[in-house]
Image 1 (cartoon, rainbow, N blue to C red):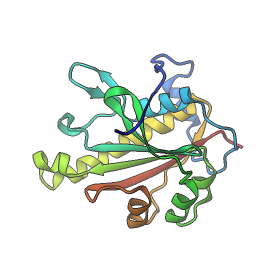
Image 2: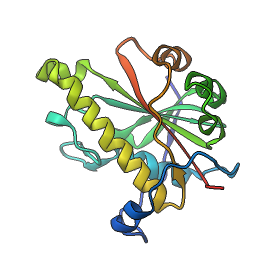
Image 3: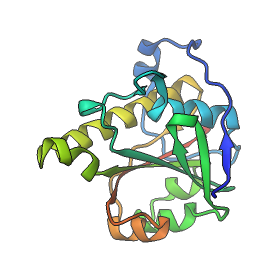
Length: 195
């Protein structure tokens, strides 16, 4: 059984308004080497896919038919993890720092290697196409956008910077992260303290 890290309780009331985060959000590609706290990572992961309504399992980002075909992975200096929304925890997949090889798979974009956290958003299309057919792929891509925007705005609210990255070698990312055949990477989002 994989080891899980229970994440700290999230805050559902912040000090920064949605309007302020929208106004301040910019793509940031240079980061300080300061580590992110577990509390910050917890808040960012919750913003991505956290449970907001326990009875029905609704999450922070909308999903067609509430099917939630997305998976969120975290790469940090300490290792590689998969986020589990139901328990608000991380499953340790590997304790190696995979940010530098992920940067290579992203056509050597430095921000991926320099960020203290890289979020990788993936889709498992079968979870949504079973109900919506090929149109489900479009719905998954829309959902990825919702998740990404939540992450970017939460980063701003935490005083952090982020950048959306879609330019990468899909096959290289899948191989590096050991993703299943069904799991398709769609986004890489480096996050850290800004220079």
